[in-house]
Length: 364
Image (cartoon, rainbow, N blue to C red):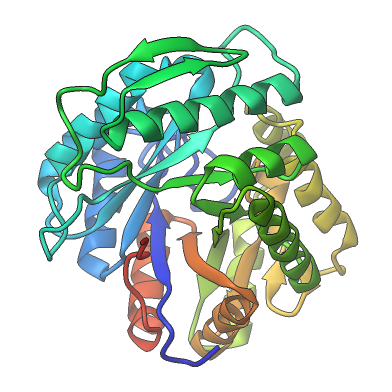
């Protein structure tokens, strides 16, 4: 892959109470709030990021839909990657909500499409539990239904989970097409769901050989459905002028962490037992004494976080080299974050972003 090949660089807004100066030590100034999360989004746009993930958790933080609608008029250029939990929704309402958010956010610079991306989460209904197979089957149906409706098609869908005969919603997206679906999951059922229905398959941090293996596997699965996927990588980052400074900052993040508190944070999520979270735990177990599982990939974050649990740590050149190595394997989109999120957003925007060719993902 040549240096000039473009990738999408996104940041992350901590809607789910996940921002710290010291991991595991709550800070009232960094808790999930309208003001704090708004400031992260505005700083990311100012810094030049292409996209920003607005995560969603039932028990934690702010409502993502309300937050996205409030933020949309404040943004001039950046896209929103809006997360929605399938277990808490109904496909026709979801299609209408996506179209409305897309309209509020407004067109891209060329005026040819909207600026909304959708992160599909195959969640349970709060208070209920559905086995993985049916749950991912439901997510597949939802993506197919919503895609058809937002592409302007009437549907007669007779599936296992939904039986719907509907015309498309009156309000359309700016492009008249369904926005891209970003989706992740490591189980067989999750991979099949992604291969059949999503546009961008997202991975959490992993060793380079596993990244390569996952991309090959999903490419092959998607081909069975006559489809192709793009690939995204969700990871934290710590970038400093020297490697010693970056590693010292990583150590500082953990310097006040109580292990029991860290365990409680990891288990607070409703998704704390899924395959992806288990894989992040395996990475921590395989890391060296300093928490590095491979060059510049540090697993210490996962000691106090459910989900994405590792960070790229190093100098600007080292971080850039790591991103380009992922690009060479087929990654086209990065969703980055760091602690505190505003501070690390500034660091990455200053030291790395100007040196990597980037822009929103393009779809046919």
